[in-house]
Length: 388
Ligand SMILES: *Cc1c(COP(=O)(O)O)cnc(C)c1O
Image (cartoon, rainbow, N blue to C red; front, side):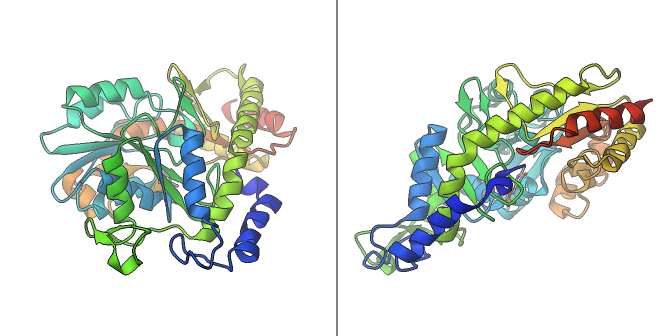
């Protein structure tokens, strides 16, 4: 959960330098005579790329914007089909719609991430990209997805890493395995800038397209005044401000510690629940190391999942997204997105019945950095009571 749990003095000091050393310049570019060489967003991008071991990182205004920019980077446009999964935050589908492309969702498998076989079934000659989502911090089985993408003529794969920032798959940071990766720094994510996002890639053209799109098409050239910049395409304003960049610099330094603590909390919590019969933990793919954002397990039935939630709330532990909040995280409920209804059928809950059956039996326990020592036992008692 977490960046917000340990936000404080370090972020404040980064912010102060904007006012103490840079004359309060809040715009990410230009104003060179005023800012005394302080470029917070630019530095944040450099440090982020280094942390993720990737060539290019583009900071932007939100994780939703990052998804839109990833699709702009790939040149996705009207009539293109983009496939994502039915269990994700609504922003993933919205970014496809914003790109005037056609959103197609797959079912999820036991891992609660994209089902590779269902992906293969839904690919058509119009499919131009795939967006996988490392939901609740568990890595997607990238080898399986990339194999399908390759068989389909090397379709580009975007990793929505809003929930997987800092986690790995087979030695690589999540977000750096497909052609493009996106991150969210909203206030509920592993690191936060209040609002913010990042797009990463090793491909120069994808980066240049996305970068220009984030700034009205400007091909920024620091040697000429801004109004003389050449233009690459149309675009919009998805820029990050220096305030967010400053906070991001401090939060990024804390990310390894956040992940380490979350993993420790998850392991203690899982240990406390291992001998409860009838629950089954969500599998993590071979080679995957989760961000440990939540502890997710299956119960035998939707009724029992709801009972777990009820007893967990009474115990003061609570749940996160599952089973209660699938409204904003499950395509089977998104009748309000006409583009999705048009592309995937008038009865979305029926189209994604298989996913719904899995999600409704699942319970997610929130993981915090500062998990109190009493939480594992409270959770254990509540779940045992609910299942008895
Ligand atoms: C949070 C989130 C986003 C959107 O990020 P914002 O920064 O809130 O716009 C996109 N996808 C997923 C899976 C998310 O969880």
